[in-house]
Image 1 (tube, one colour):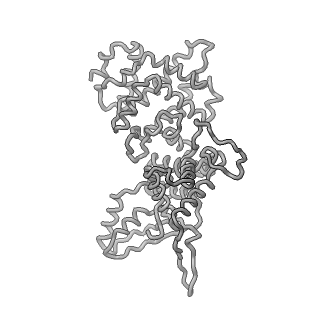
Image 2 (image 1 turned 30 degrees about the vertical axis):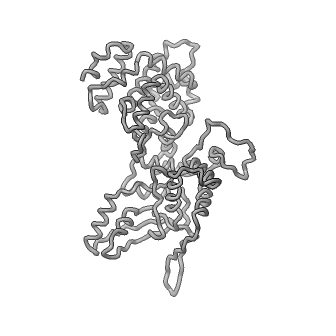
Image 3 (image 1 turned 60 degrees about the horizontal axis):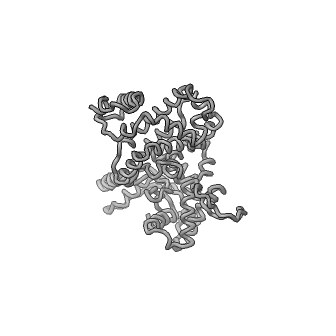
Length: 436
């Protein structure tokens, strides 16, 4: 640990690709190794090494790995981290982060407030650019996050696999602990991420939330594209892995800052796996069920980015029609409380119900009316007209039925939603959902 560290993802700086440290695992390893000096862990520790500081030396018929001291100060490390990020970014990502390049001849600043850094690494590069110009403008929390990240990634070695074994062994004081170590010099960042994924998916598999977070926050868009085919071979769709990140960061998303990526951060109330189910159910809606809806916008629907835009338009329309209800749910989330509207069953069933109603209503729409998903305005009009019969009190009034997140519970909610809609919101108190 003197010359190695762990590029671990953290709540306030998720650019690291290593999974979160599980103290229980390291403690169990420490206890096991303390039991007897004969207890060993034969699995190799995998280390990615910086060839500028780690080299192989031959001397007197013996071979050594030599690790040189790192004498760089924090300012130099900050400059190098900015350089490491920006050299990985595509020109489009650099422009989105307002980072100038020699090949960019545009003199006009990016004043379009609708634009934002198109990847997590681009957002970090934008922040580092600001830090290099005036470190004092950053909040103390961001300064600490950057310093801790730099301290971790600037060491000569980065542990790709074996962080729990190393830290568990570090806490053993009664005797030495020896590990086999594989040192791989010169791995690019994207190659480190790929090897980490392969190693860990074959041993203790990564949770889907961890996988999506790692891909979307530790790789640039260009790196994701370059690894696309290799990820596909391992059973991962890198493009889909970015969806929940977009939900949580895009200014166009009403779910911004509400998605919990496993850190249980205050204010994040919708688990990432729920967000993934919600967006996946929309952008991959079965064509045989919704063909009448999708055929009207086939050209737009065939573009991945447009599907995301439609999803964002759809839920923004819901949030605007249910403005008071939505704002109340967001405020409650900031206090660590979950309202019924943001429950998994509510989000999934409401989305399905609206899409089904869209299909049902299509034959009765005016021939001059635009398709529901032609643009944001058409989407909002369709959502508004459909929700007219489903008042917000359906979600604000307490449901007496419990354990709704089951197949039976979801069908019950869908049926009750349909009854309320057919009755234009009347006589809700007599319904099974509210009577228990």
